[in-house]
Amino acid sequence: MTMKFYFGRGTVALASLIALEETGITYEPVRLDMAAGQQRSPDYLAINPKGRVPALVTDQGILTETPALLVYIAQLAPEKKLAPLDDAFAFARLQSFNSYLCSTVHVAHAHKLRGSRWADQESSFEDMRNRVAGNVTECFSLIESEMFIGPWVLGDQYSVADAYLFTVAGWLAGDGVDVNQFPAIADFVARMRARPAVAKAVALENA
Ligand SMILES: N[C@@H](CCC(=O)N[C@@H](CS)C(=O)NCC(=O)O)C(=O)O
Image (cartoon, rainbow, N blue to C red; front, side, top):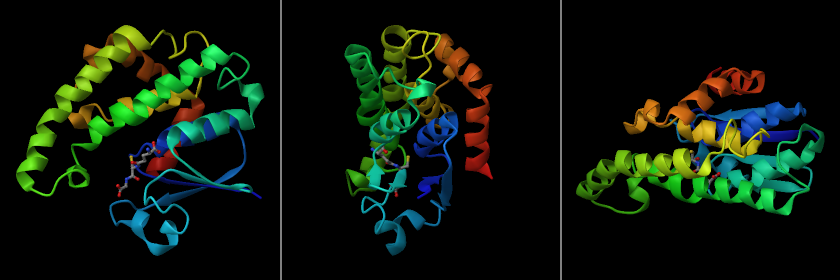
């Protein structure tokens, strides 16, 4: 069975889309119209009851959550070395990095447009929006100074964590944060754009 990958424009699903393109595996990309709320349609909720992207439909079942998808995709093509599969410590570092993006950086960013997840009053949304640039800056300062080894996230070996960092870094401008205050990340983003798999994934997002 050909895997189906559900994604939306401008979402975290770009990370898994890049990873899929890096593997060269055959899959069917399905783009949802997020602005029209297609992620909450009954048809899609039957695939992912969370009403979010990404979702990957495999012959064993459906996978959601970016950190899980990324290591799964890496393991589908071990010869591409998209994760340090035979080094327990390095693999844990990959998971640590991806978990930080998922549970802290993405959540900090989501306070800009998705305040209704946490509060009801318009004044609360404004309060949350006002914290986004500062919180995201704090996260990226830590990534730049402590977590990112270079030239890639884990050092010399390119991995799925790079696809994830590239995706989340793509939200900086919209969050009111200038990527150029993080020189290593700005250089990383430019090098990522030059990768054919990244260009293909970005084109699929915008097609
Ligand atoms: N923890 C999930 C988060 C997925 C998520 O929040 N996706 C957003 C797009 S970036 C979404 O589908 N939002 C749709 C909505 O909230 O209606 C992951 O990392 O995959």
